[in-house]
Length: 423
Image (cartoon, rainbow, N blue to C red; front, side, top):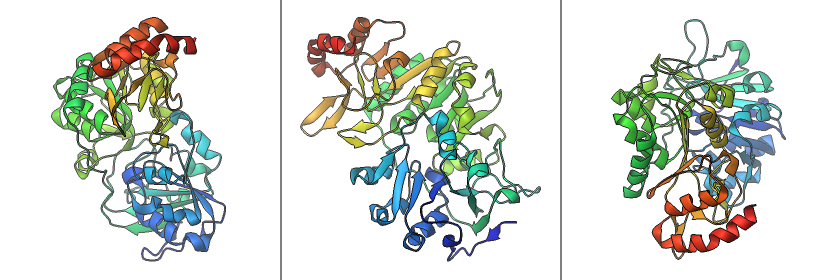
């Protein structure tokens, strides 16, 4: 049976050793009482590594790097403060492999779980994804059992023998930062919605633009969901009845996700909802699984894209703000799906120090997160460019057409040099 920890002063030094690598759930799935206690006891424990996902809490303060080395797959959320201070190391792997990669290094796993059911089994609450394989691989598993955590059905549960220590709480969940969108995002969303078919199976990424795009699909019928995360936008589609999953060729009737990342309204909607299921990343991001679903539609964003279809989703102005993530996994799955649709959506411009700058460029300013060989459909507020089956010269022409008008002439001038550099 697991050791019961004192909720006011949990002694984590009993379980965590200097030099350990510790991992916990991301966004609202973070076991906040445990992670705050861990940061408070960091000096007593000694130096350790913390692998974090998207952070919405105060446990990723730069001040904690006196004893903590932070590593993440992303620079999203409050991770940006660590990245700006050069105190965030990045693990640049495809999301589909993240669980396996972490299984080789994580010593201590911290989870937020639901109270046990009648059979004594604990639920993952909000996140199964890359946490699932770590349950059997980590030396120590410590669980914050939160009475206020939603019981979202999951493909995997935990028994008492899977857990070494338990801390029992009843606290509100973290909520995401408020997001706002404007006319640009509305126009992009309208262009994307015109491409998406009824009965499509949706995957959307994290952020304001994917959320806005999802909401634009409320007039569609019989949509399905198979995604890395369910956000408020997808929750809106469920509420409106646009999602039925009735025509999914896999997991019919069920919305599949690895993570739920949204407001309390979303978590209330999904609590004990039999039409939703959490699953591990090895399933949600498996390109073979994705390719086996008709009309699989992947909708992701980017920092910038070049004229040949290369995508930088990681670095902006020299700072790590995004991730390799699951975009390549989902784009490849959509490309192989019958009537599938691989989409990258982004505003045509970003705010620069001296005014707007183009996000469609001749040469990327950051790394190639997704190769041009995986390019599909690119969408800005100026339209859509379907690069599938096009040559490099044809791609340049199409990408210039969806760039902001004030940058098109410059991009055309740079096009020949870009082609020569990429051949």
